[in-house]
Image (cartoon, rainbow, N blue to C red; front, side):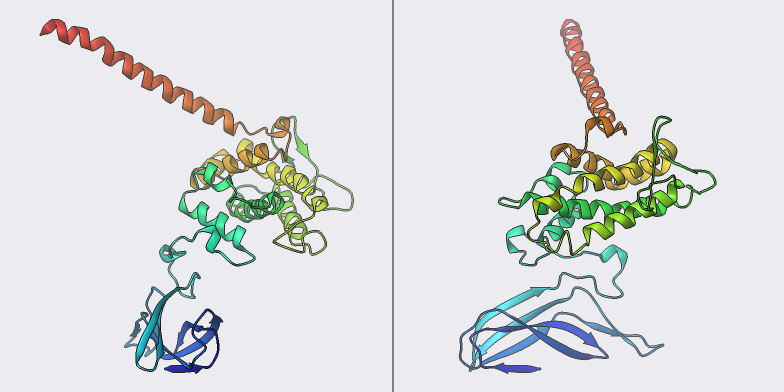
Length: 314
């Protein structure tokens, strides 16, 4: 399929297939203003199912584009389509090369960068929480809080199998903490699972509000000030899961390090008081590190004691 365009820009087509045909859409790049022929060669292959006669495209969705002026090849471009196409297997999700923050030109670049770092290594909390140079702090905190709410939905789904209204009639953590749900006209007690749903719904409504957060590029200070209250409310989901559904909490935490990351996040940006951080996640981490250091010292001391004995035997 050949395309001719008389323009000072190169129109790079994107690949999509259906019933063996190729549909092409254009995005702006560069080229000589002369008449240019864009020859497209798609690396995607298709297979036909003998039983149904349907055709299925194999990954990866990468296309190559050749720029021609007359008979001379001017350049070759490779386009990586960073999207999960319908029918993609779970094991192949997000199967594309990482991209530097400077190369991300979307208004959702901060969200994409955060999610890319989480997929790369969710245990590397320092890297995930480290903003790119020159990044607006308000937007950085806002996008992280959106991501926390997204991932907390996964914990809420797991809690639904065990946290029932008849067993967890109140949103509690320890015996000293009973939380009132702010989703009602006047705050009142809610079953824990309802409190969880109401809190995540309320956070989503606020963070997607055009009134307070009309832009993903810049945020007013008055709107940034509202992030602290969202942090305090969604943290109660962690505390309830930790003290009342420990197995579910540990399994999800070992998979995502979400509570670790959230705790480090609110401490780094002073979004919550340390007195309200009742899940001893950081204390457990410090204790584990101390135990590892003690074991290493003991192993080193034992090796040092064996040397004189070995020397005496010699």
